[in-house]
Each structure stands twice: as structure tokens, then as C-alpha cells.
Length: 492
Image 1 (cartoon, one colour):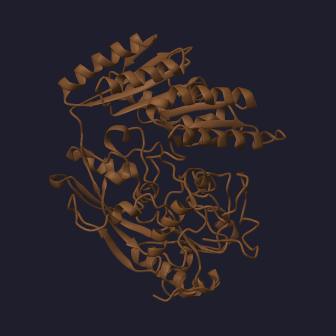
Image 2 (cartoon, helix red, strand yellow):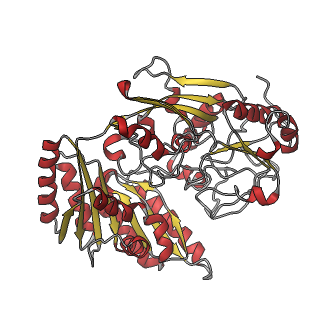
Image 3 (spheres, one colour):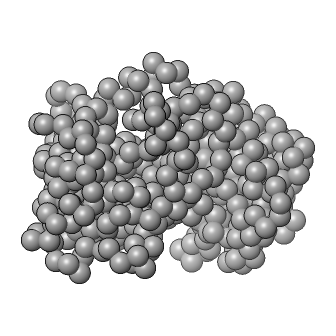
């Protein structure tokens, strides 16, 4: 392949596509382009040069090939629910929207497989498989709207990843458009195919290795019994101690989630979920599996929660009550808008045993800086989602919130964790990568990326710090980085 070194324009790409894709699905009107200027992280906004609403993999391949011919950057976007700016457009590039690829091609219970387009909504896979006794286990909070392609790009998890693993554990093969426009298949349906694990490399690569157009995913058998439990505690320390004790007892629940008092307050105002009044923290525990096993585990979880100070312990008695318990947890992010005009959704992970220490220090940081922090997180695997609350109309409040957000990330790294648990690095956390990795680590990652994308046109500006400058202060920015045109700046 000849590597295009001179950047062309989206106008040249548009000319190439006019005989391939109907004009109604090639968006250039500024008002229409503005619809796509951000994903779920609305603090970052960039208007794309061109939006292509692709109908199938062939149109995506034609679009990417045109971008490759002219050296124009492209960004893939599914439902746009990502929370790290992974689908943030490029101002001089093409946004390839995959949300019209919504065919579920096969559901095969006999070998626990489904073959789906990557624009298919996560929950639709479960709805198609449930009548046959199966479901798709990865369940991000946005599962009612997020796409399988987005799950693949970010290696999404969700409440049940503690027991069942992240998206990478449930993808067997992918049909992919590479950054030069070629359509290839990565992986096989075999459980352990020979050769390099290219599916493993692609899942979680955040669109920097190409565009996934179809996925063969693993289905999981519906459990015989499910019990969803809500336990109220006076403090997050008690809830955290109960979590550690449950895991230490040998039980692996399908999910263990913690919400603190601020998160509970927001959820109650938004959806009236009926959590225990006066609770400083609630624990949502879900047990699933064979009925006798779940019965035994339920008794143990009840005993542990009461020993650790739970003042209210109850189990959902039917599907409606179960949904009510989960509604509070799954609405928490959006609900925070009821108690704060602005907030930053942070996403870090720490070893589970470090949770009490990290949560206490986060509380100290919050008080020291005068910035409220609400906590709702996957306690079972130490996956934190602190919500840093502020009012952008107040002078200096945004900067203080960003400072606290960065201090939380540093806290996670200090305790052996990571800068992201499941939301990805995207545009938001690229600046934090050097805090976790040495230059040699980042260069090694770039070698893999360049094997797929030597021209650097697939979702540039994500994951890796750009420009890579020492001492650059993390902050919210809009549009292209002011130094990208500076002579000598090292661009990836």
C-alpha cells in the first residue's frame, strides 16, 4: 500500500463518494453537521467536515478507501454514547456513522452464537436471544441505546462484568474495514484459534485500527434463578467492607454496585427508586445461577450485610421490583443533573482491596477543594465512576472540578489502578496516559497501531497524547489543539 503523506480535503472525499452513496446520506449542511459534534462527553465539541450515514459495510469500505486515497482522517461513530470522547469528530475529517447497520443476521442457541451488524443496539441482542434461553452478558448502563460497535471499540463492561467479563470475553470474530479500505475478517468462531489474537487487539482499540462492521458474539445461558438485593448502610466504608467480605467468602455475584448519599439523592429526585431513607450508601447485589446455589449464597450475603451494619436489607420479589432497584443505579449518571448544573464523569479503577482507602482520600480531596463528588461504582471489581459536580457559571469552578478529577486519576494510579475502567481513553484521557505509561510503552503501542494504520488517519488524536508535550496542563478544550500547527510538534 502507498502511504498518503499529504493531507487532502473532505471535498475530495465527497467527490469520490457522490457516485457511491446517495447525497441524502452525505451531510455537509452546518446545521446537520452540528448534530454530530460530540458523543456522550458533551464538554468536547468539534464539527466534522463531512458526515457519511453508511447503509452497509461496502459503503463504509468505499468511504474509508476514499479517505485513504486523499489522506483524510476518519472517525467511526455508532450511537454516540461514549463517555471519553472516543467518537469526537475531526474538524478536517469524515465521520462514518454506523448506526444504520442494524441487522441481526443469526441467533444460534445450539452453539451459543449470534452474528450481528455493529450498529445493532446492545439490548436488542438480548431481546432476540431471550426467547431461546440466552442473553448477551456485557451490559453497560447505556445498553438500551449503545451499539455493539461502540462496545467493541471501548471494550465496554457494565454491572455484570464482575462475573461474566468485558466485551472482549464475548467477541469471537469481527468483520472489519481496515484504514486502507480493505474488508477483512479477524478471528474465527473457534474458541481458541491459532495465530496472533487480532480480535483481542481490535477490541478496545477505540477506532484507531479500523471500523468494525459485523461481529460474531458469544451468548450466555439465562440463569435458572436471579435474586436482586438492596442493602442500606450508614457509610460507604460499611458498604465497602460488606463487598470485600462477600467476595472473600468465595461468592462471585453477578453484580455488586455501590452508590453513596449524593448519588442516591440524585437518583431519588430523578426516578423515585425507593432506596432506604437516610442511607449513606446502598449496595445492589445480584446473584444468579442454579436455584440451590443462589439460595445458599443469598443466606450468606444477608448474614454478611447485617454483620457489617446494614440497617435495611430486602430482595426484589418480582421482575418489576428488580427493575425498580436497577432503575436507580442505571439512571445515576443522568440523574446527577438534578443536583448539579455541570459534572465530570470520571472513570478509574483500583484493586478492590484499595477501595476503602481510595474512597476516604477522595472524600478528603472533595472537602479540601470545596468540590462535591458523588460516587456510584462497580464495587466488585473496583471500577470507580466518581461524578465531580460543579457550576460552570461560577468563576473558577470548572478549573477546580478538573483539578479534582485529575487528582482522582492520580489516586487510582498511586494505588495500583488504571486511568480508565470501561469508558476508554478517547480524547478525554489521552493527556493522562504519560502518568501511567513510560514513553517506551506508548511507542510500543504505536508500533501495533502503525501496523494497521501507517498513515495515521483512523481516529487520530485519541488514546495517545497529541501533541506529546511535557507539562501540558489537563483541561477542557474545544476544537483543534492550538499547537497542532506549530512547527516541530510531534503529531501521531
